[in-house]
Length: 264
Image 1 (spheres, rainbow, N blue to C red):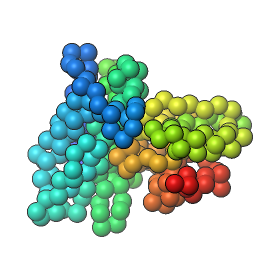
Image 2: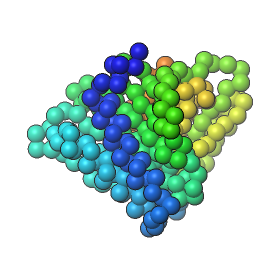
Image 3: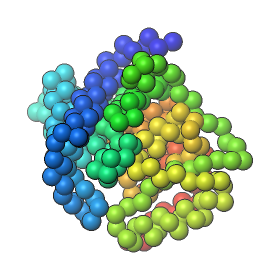
Image 4: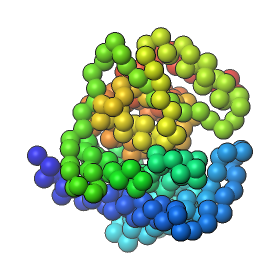
């Protein structure tokens, strides 16, 4: 059953690249963070974010030098003779968790074919959790326990009368207020909410059926590129921001409760 995805070259490369980023993150106990703010207080970047992205880019460029690379920390790398494939990189999704030693952080890598906009492969590696998630278009979604080497195929949960939703909040106060108001309206459909601090891992939790839904306004492509494919290949309904302006959501979400703009 696993043979096609285990031999898909784009999936294998996504996994190797995400693992290279995660290897950098696993050194958090032995190096300084060099913590800096980006857009607002709490929107942190560290030397680990940059070093992990550099490691991921090296893996990708060594194997596929004609692919375009877009990431969170560095400008896009556009080759002279583009292949038509583009990688989306989040070297450290969950930086606040990483800095505060909360285990929910990861490296996330996905590739898209630009001719038709199809996401073909994605991988997410969470070193503190000891897990790897990955998927290929039409090949299913999978979770690997790194220590035990246990591999399982993922299946999203069915709707129930005791559903849990995950979400996130922005660093801008106006956006947070908007997100909180939307969540208040959404909560009539759910018995509880989770906010773990990593959009990529939220989507993986939908994929493995641990929660039934995830919705967040204002995420960037690198936040959801790999996770959205993983959730989709696990059978969850996935809507990306280009399909629903501003919103990334997956699982059992009522889109009529997601307003189109935060008013800014």
